[in-house]
Length: 288
Image 1 (tube, rainbow, N blue to C red):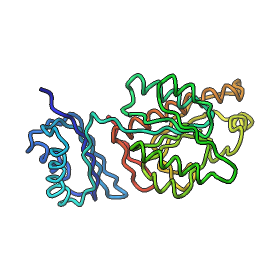
Image 2 (image 1 turned 60 degrees about the vertical axis):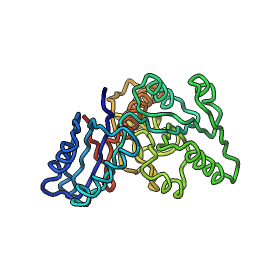
Image 3 (image 1 turned 45 degrees about the vertical axis):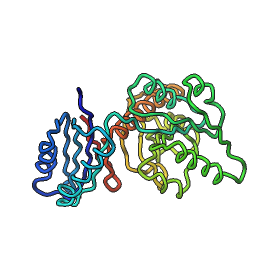
Image 4 (image 1 turned 90 degrees about the horizontal axis):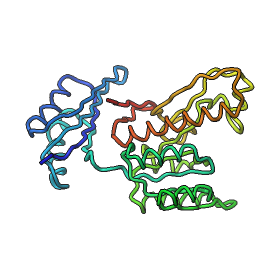
């Protein structure tokens, strides 16, 4: 009979013996390590560890006991922040979108094919443009329009929905609204946004036309955690594609949307697989 799989994530001040202590704890339990990554940030003097392993713990009580044992031994000794995550549990995710559909289309396609370890709890929007798409995937669609002078009330409905659906992650899949400071703080480390990498160089409307006018040679996208600093949260993933003078704004926009979709999917997958560690204004992403 196969054993359950878990992920242990931990971080602490760097010192001698961290990896040995982590692996020793798991070995003493008879756990089988199937993947391990370790990184030391020399400037911050912090150590980050992600371990995936198989263990005999099969119930919530078993998991709590394992976590308690780790807390009293390894974590207490090194002053670690840590958490155990069941590998087979998909992250409950609410998706917010406005009128643009390229990011949510790519996201839903990869979710449908099983390439994203998330469980989508619903799609929320300030427009009804994506209702048909949600219906096709048989997902609940919440249309929360923004009435003049009532944006805080609309945002409160989204936060309430996030809690009511027991969601763990909010994806802003081209949700073209700025979240309030309260929402950013409430969702700290639990909200991912995507934008074209022209920011802050090309702000405002028609960024690809602005880029065309400036003759850019690369376009790209950035996925990051949402903070009160607009589009300046800790970066999870970025990518670019080369362009040239023959490409009109529409072609630049098409290529840019492809990159946005790819970058957002990567960021969501790494977050849901517990590979991303926030480290001040930066992130540590412990990929394979």
